Image 1: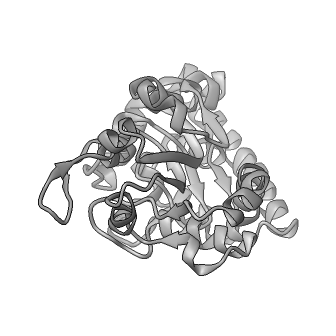
Image 2: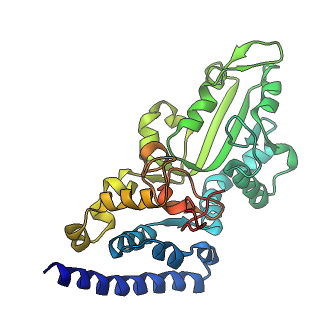
Length: 295
């Protein structure tokens, strides 16, 4: 009986692989050229057992890929209604969303460049850091800043921006949150994606955040196995244990099997893959093989 079961799985594997490959090739033909970066055959075939290959197929098929055109379309719906207001005001500016260290390949820079391209707003509407904005507010001027980014995953980056102590030119300590409370600063944050987990964790920031799409908890693959893997496969193998074994095989310890924040996403953008996506999908193995790319 066991031998017959293995043969059935192997037969089904080749059928499902062919179907998945046909879907990907169709996307490439339709113009989703970014999918060419998805070396799905190499990724699937890098696993030694049929069970692992099956899990790899369904993980790859679960990826939500956001092309540049799609991101532009969603951002345009958010930004275009207020473009003229931004253009006419001397107190509204775009500021790059970033961590403590400035890195021009960060997503904040990528999406700010996109905004510059699609809006045609002049150079002085954009600032690389908040320090330049602070100079304006130090004069008692109220300034509104607009931030754009790819994903608000855990919400930690936004919270850090809001609460991290800073010092002005006089050496006085302050936070952005305090500036908002004093009426010196207004904030609008437009991430392409935002997780429901982040909004629940930092619900005090709801008034500042306007995501294009909210990812609810069902996007956590490892917490919703039945939604992403067929029942017949779940009946025959332990999906979670197989994912764990695949991570051990690929020596992926950095964020745990669920990725940063334990979010268990399968999200990728045209420019990079967030670390909240399953590391199994983007972290390269010893042979340099991965499904997705992270920069």
